[in-house]
Length: 521
Ligand SMILES: Cc1cc2nc3c(=O)[nH]c(=O)nc-3n(C[C@H](O)[C@H](O)[C@H](O)COP(=O)(O)OP(=O)(O)OC[C@H]3O[C@@H](n4cnc5c(N)ncnc54)[C@H](O)[C@@H]3O)c2cc1C
Image 1 (cartoon, helix red, strand yellow):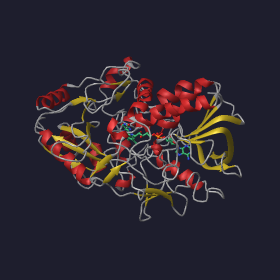
Image 2 (cartoon, rainbow, N blue to C red):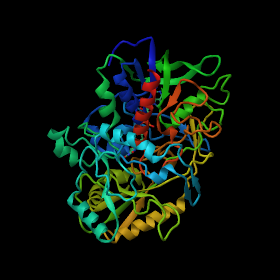
Image 3 (cartoon, rainbow, N blue to C red):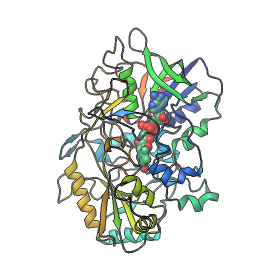
Image 4 (cartoon, helix red, strand yellow):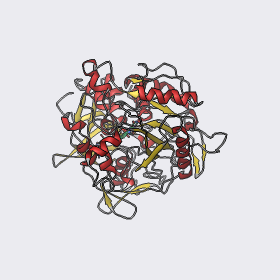
C-alpha cells in the first residue's frame, strides 16, 4: 500500500472487515485513490492463536470495548477490531442466503420482510464472492439452494470418517445432508496441509497458517502494494461531518494515536459492523440530521438481528477423532415442513469442542472437574450449531448511552421454531449413533457475561430498500438522504435468513463496488 497519506481521496472506506475489505479489493483495480480506515491493527500470528484457554477462557482476541444492555448494565461485546474484522475469527462457513430469504417469510412471531432485490438479481455477486474467497463446496446437493451460474472454485472438503458415517446414516434415513461451503485455502497452503485440514480450531480462532479465507488474507493483503490504496490502522473514526446542506459528507473525523485527524473524499463508505455503523451515524447528528445522519426515517439502529442460535453437543460411546468438523450441514427444516407450518432453520457442524471451551462456557459446572475428564468427554462429542432466523423488530436496536457508547436492546424471537429445530435434531441424532446430547450456551465461541454480548452475526441496523420512509439506504446501499454516503457491512440486511451472513456481505460489497466504479467513471 502507498505509505504517504494523500490529502484528498476518491473513496474512503471505514472498516476493513467482510464488507469494507471486500469493497476495497473490488475498487482497487480502478486506480482511484482509496483510503481504508481501520480501528484495529493486524491480528498477530502467534502460538496463542490456537490456544483454547487463551482464546476461549481469557478472550485474548476480544477487543476492549464497553457496551450497555437494555437495563444499562455494561458488558464487553465479542467484537474483534482487526484488519479483516470479524472474519479473522469466523468459521468461514460461506453460505448463500436461500431464494426464499429474499421474499417475505411468515414466522411464528411475525413476518420476515422481503429484500428489494431478488435472489436471481443477487446471484452473480454470490458467484464472484465464492471465487474471491476460494470457497470449497458442491452446488446442487442442497434442495433449498437457488440457481448458481458457476460451480464453486474448489470441490467440497471431504468428510472425515466419523462425519462420513453420520452423513451416510442421515442419507439412509431420508434426510438431505450436504457438504457445507468452507472458505479454506487448502491449495495455497499445501506445505501446511497437515496442520490446516486437521486443524480443530478454525471456528472462533484466528488461523496461524493463514489458511482461512478471511478478508485480511484474500481481500486486503492482495491490494497492499498498490500505490492508489492507503490503509491506516489504529484509526478510530468517531464522526462524519456534512456540508451546510446536509447532503454531502465532507469530513471523516479520526482519532489515531491520540491525535484527531480529518480526511475527505468524494465517496464515503461506512462498514464498521452493524452496531458500530449505527453508532457512528447516530453520533454524527447535526442541524440537518438532528436524530442522526441519514436517520429521517428513524430506522438507524433499529431492526438489529443476530440469529437465534444454539450449540448442541452430542455424546456417543464411539470416539470422534474428527479434526475439521465443519464439513456437513442439513437444511431439511429450512422452510415449513408437512408437520410444522413455520420455517425452523439450518443445522450445521461447529468446530470441534475441547475441554477448555467447556470451562469457558460453564465455569461453575466444570470448576471441580479434572482436566482429563473434560478431555475424555470432548473426545466423544459431535458438535452441532442450530440457527433459526430472528426477526428485525424495530424495538431491537442500537442507541447511544449517556457516555456515547453503544446501548443494545434485544429481545429474542421465534423461540418455538428454535425449539422445534432442536426437537428435529434430537430425532436426527438417533440415526447418527449419538442419542445422548446436551445444549450448551447460545454462543459457543467464547465465554461471555450475557447472551446479548454474542454479537457475531449482528446485522440490520441500516437496512436497504426502495422506500426512504422505512429504510436508511437505497438499492445501491447509498443513504437516501445523502449524495455520497454508502454502507456495505451487514447493516444493510432487511432480514437475516437462517444461514451465516458473511458471504452475503462480501457479495453485496462487490455489487456496490461495481456501482461505485461506474459512478466514478
Ligand atoms: C467467532 C465468529 C464466528 C463467525 N463465523 C461465521 C461463519 O462461519 N460464517 C459466516 O458467514 N459468518 C461468520 N461470522 C460472522 C461474520 O464474521 C460477520 O458477519 C462479518 O464479518 C460481518 O462483516 P462486516 O463487514 O459487517 O463487519 P466486520 O467484519 O466486523 O468489520 C467491521 C470492521 O470495522 C472496524 N471498525 C469498527 N468500528 C470502527 C470505527 N469507528 N472506525 C474504524 N473502523 C471501525 C472493525 O475493527 C472491523 O474491522 C462469525 C463471526 C464471529 C465473531
